Length: 112
Length: 116
Image 1 (cartoon, rainbow over the protein chains, first blue to last red):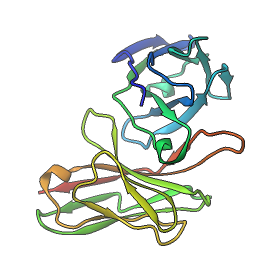
Image 2: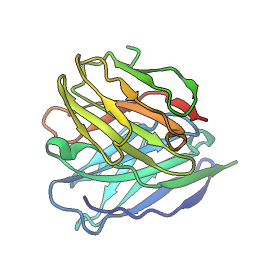
Image 3: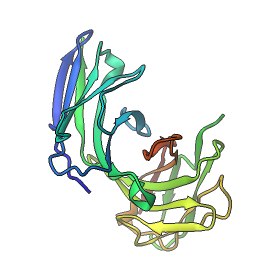
């Protein structure tokens, strides 16, 4: 599996956009980029995923570089409830390889 | 829909005792999996299942057994609990969106296990 690198922690002011980077320089062509988050002590929550194109849903936007070696999760208007650990995961699309492996993630703290 | 339901939420065991963590989903998802999370760390995959009757090992399977007799249920058994198994356990179920190879997980609320 491609390895991902994320900053250990980030701060963001409430109401501003939070941009969370992820490096995955060894990603292969059939691997998706997933983002999940985990609010303290709760089960992780799916946010968004993408393969090649940028994606947007009601929670966030995912920007994937053209060479697919890095991506950015954007929370457009961060609130205090967005304080959580954010996991960037890269995983293949077929069979048992679909099972996701979580790293240490980025602790995002939204400040009032 | 209840989503993914885990029981119990909290459990204390003595070393050597056995127990089963229950996981049930009502979304008709094919895939189910168990993760453990130790303090300050990410989730590690214990076992997973790609359908009824089919299970496989993840990163940290030792000391745990699973079975998948129905689509809905995926229990995790600890045969002889050890202090190293003190952790928070999360069950997840997942589906593959039509036309996509992606795997989108829905997690339960977790089961906090302490082994003395």
